[in-house]
Image 1 (tube, rainbow, N blue to C red):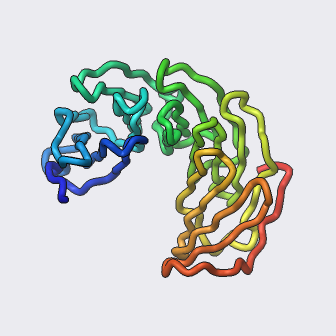
Image 2 (cartoon, rainbow, N blue to C red):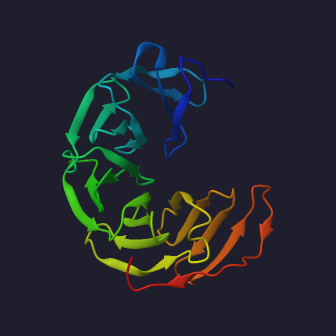
Length: 246
């Protein structure tokens, strides 16, 4: 099955939790900076919502299904979060993230779509908000700028530091650190951490490296494995060091 409709390269794509829907967005470069969001039925390939267009010289950073897969949400680089009802295409909720004084660099939704985390371009902070109310739940502080953030369904927040290549983990509901930070000390100065994901239960981290490998780290056992781009399971030759701070 091939889904068509975007007139520019697709930038983001995500499944609903029940697998019934697929949402994607693209930038309409030939018409300016506008972006469009589309939702399809995965069984029939039909569009189930009128394409939504965001035309405010913005960039979509993250999309997710929310409200038990009855709505779809997006977050833009201007810190605007918008939620549309799938059955009607109606804009049912929108709000401005607390970092509206600065452009948003990073954004991620939890797997169940109930929470969103954002981090601004020039500040060492992470905000956790409810997608149901748009209210701020907690504000987290890092000691350096961040390269990636992720959030689990139970509210565990992980963030990678740009300078120290350190991952810090918080409870997004309380704002408290819940695990010792993990630093990739042997990668500093040679390899960048390019992406980050956390498992829905918040116990396993996956980190994408600029070398093309993926590091998988178990927070409970403090063990890890390295996957190569060829999908081979490789023994890890470097080690993680637990740090007291970022």
